[in-house]
Length: 215
Image (tube, rainbow, N blue to C red; front, top):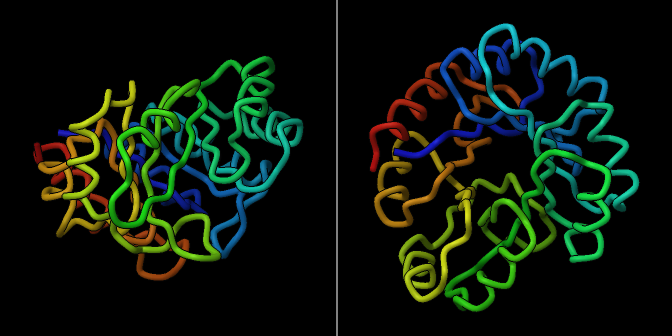
């Protein structure tokens, strides 16, 4: 079993539905692309969700500097800051000084990822998000991580305090991903969509049900 994060939310009805299903985390993108939202829009999404469940609020950031991230996190009333781009130690420390929630760092992998690289990336943050490296894109690629290679790397290192698995997850493959990698959280966006930013509620339900019983 793994907790679920529905990410790339753009509509209040999708956020509320995800919360009603019992998702642990709901994510809004500030990093760019077709799912990008403003902090004001994100706050409205999260407030709609809060009427339906207790999911924690995640903001996904790209190239913003620490000060901008802090300001946006406060405006959107976030519980978690997820760093896709700016995540060097000094930026993480600056964010921690002014943000009381969790800080997650994203590592984008392709092929074999050295265990030491995973260990270093997990340092100083509350969770490590493993996503697929695709040139020119920070996330939301729909391309799956090589779960077998990742599992092998994790076996050779001290696992992160919390491991979040992203990249190409769908209702049809999340059970296998969980069985191989044993993440704490599975993170899905395009894998439960009918169009970019438009969530399919049947797929959301199916994904969550499999994730909860998949380990």
